[in-house]
Image 1 (cartoon, rainbow, N blue to C red):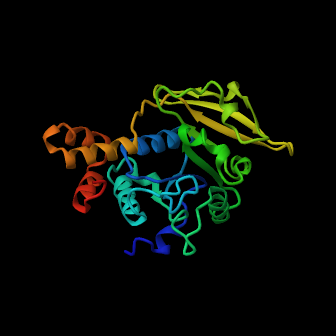
Image 2: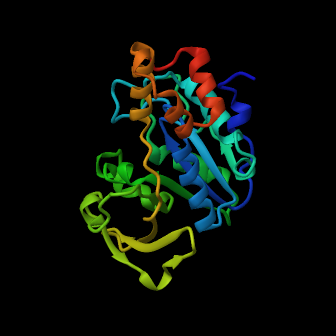
Length: 256
């Protein structure tokens, strides 16, 4: 299959509750899968769309691995565990543009929303680190109203002052009556308000015990390649990445 085939990106989105999960996926790791699984369970999502991004405006130097490799690794990651695969899918909605222009989340969400049935709901799934930078995104204040946000936090992230992270003009209020918690997943509900008087829900997953960083994984691989005598890297690497992704990185000589 052509890695940039439009056929894959235009497959009908299964179900009516779909979450867009965009990012570099450089590389896709077990933390990404765990976040998607938690969001899927907490919000009863039919599909989580993993969408490697072509060009991010806030990363002018681009990703370490090129898009084709990141797309291939993401395919392998979501197919690596049969428990995940039925509700996970690849999306080319954020693929590189022929014009080489940046990919803007608001435009991507608008395109995806047009492909859903009228009764469908589109969410936007992101980590708290991305949410903290939301105010810098293109037309940031419109994004939560194009698709309700699902924000997943890692251990140690300060979530006590979400208002400080909001784009200008937006306000937030907690809706604790709607909060829920199972033995594994806590879900907090909030409402965002804009100056036009519109409201949009925001969902927070605050208790995910996921301490994985893609940049640290890349650093581990470089250390192993350039200082093999130091050892001890191979095992942690395999604990942080799906095995097929580890093999792909090795076979293609990525992150050296």
